[in-house]
Image (cartoon, rainbow, N blue to C red; front, side, top):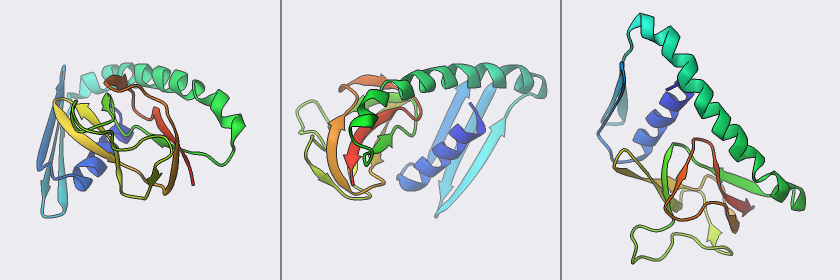
Length: 159
C-alpha cells in the first residue's frame, strides 16, 4: 500500500461515519481511527520489509490503473468537456444500495457535488462514493458487482 492510497483512506474515513479501520497484509498493518473530526494513523512496517514490499505493492497497482485509463480513451475524443468520476479505492462496485433497490444514478440523471453515485465494497465495508462534480451522467463505465481498481473511471459526467 503506497502513501497516496493511505491518504485516500484517511479522506474516506473523514467523509464517512466509520470510527475505525484496520488493514493487515503480510507484515504490513495500518489502523485509522476517527475521533471528533480527528483522524489518527497507526502504521507498522518492519524496516527490512518496507524496502522489499513497497515496490511490489506499487507496481501491480500501477499496471491495472494504466490499462484502466487506456480503456476510456476512445470516449474522450467524442466530447472534451466530460469529467470522469473515478474510484477512490479498490473494491467491488455496486450501482445501488441492494439488489432490490433502484440505482443511485442512471444515464441522463443530474448529479450535484456530494450526491452518492455508487457504493464500493472494500474488506466487507460498504463505502458510499459521492460525486465531486455537478452535471449530467453521460455514461456508466463499470458493470454492477464488478471489481474496480484505485483511480479507475466509473462515470462520465457532462458539467
